[in-house]
Length: 323
Image (cartoon, rainbow, N blue to C red; front, side, top):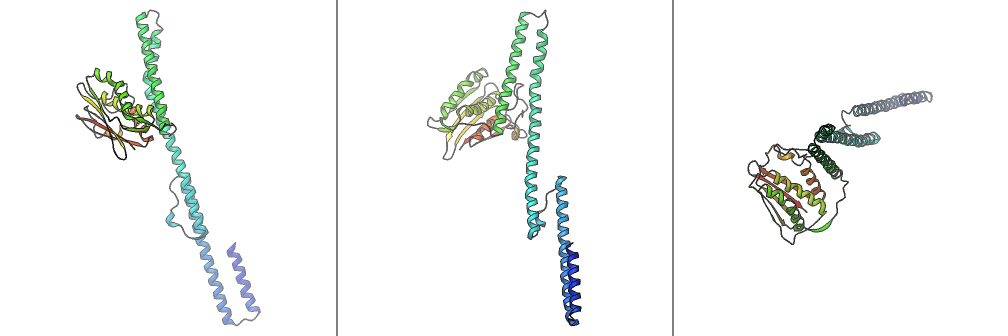
């Protein structure tokens, strides 16, 4: 439409020149100038059309989820601004789309894991419930089945409760207290909890922590995090072994080291031990693989980190740093 109007204006200008008898040389110069302006306008218009077609093509690619508009092809002016705004909008939409897909994958994996973990105890409960219906069943067997059903029910309850806690930690929805606590008091209570477990396996359980070390933390959840690690070390340490807990205060962090003389963790499994539902070979049947994952989440939520070093046949060392 713009080119048609420009053509009409050029024609009128040439006609006026002829009517007012402008010298032919001036007519030629003026005509050449007008034609040059017209050609430049045509080229500019077609370039804009091409850029608009490219933008439309980009948007079609985005719609098909193929790629984003390339910033390197942008130009100055309003078209460049339009290109830039489209890129920003599409980037935001793609990030949101990727986030939603990640959340969907997380939920699918979570439901799959829940189904897998609950399937075994539910099957056991169903079988024992059917057995309880038998009229000839003795009282002794009946009480035994009831006790096993209760055990499996408690296992499911424990699993669901801990899974809910882990989900809240991963979603940053669990509020943790920030209070000054004695580290020795926390570790002494943990040692007391696992004394019998260590004694049954003939494992030497020791704790060395200075009285004066104070940390800012949520006592309940910090106890839970360290307890999971100590329990894991005891479970994977053979009879006659040892598990030790030591703490030291540095200038910028409090360092807690938990060392065992257990079976160790192979290099290929080491990167995954803090992953939710991950079970390394040799784990007990009752393990569901969320204890260490929960410990890491709790420690990270309290401005800390946890690392592990291990060698098969020698043992493992967990290092917690609270800043």
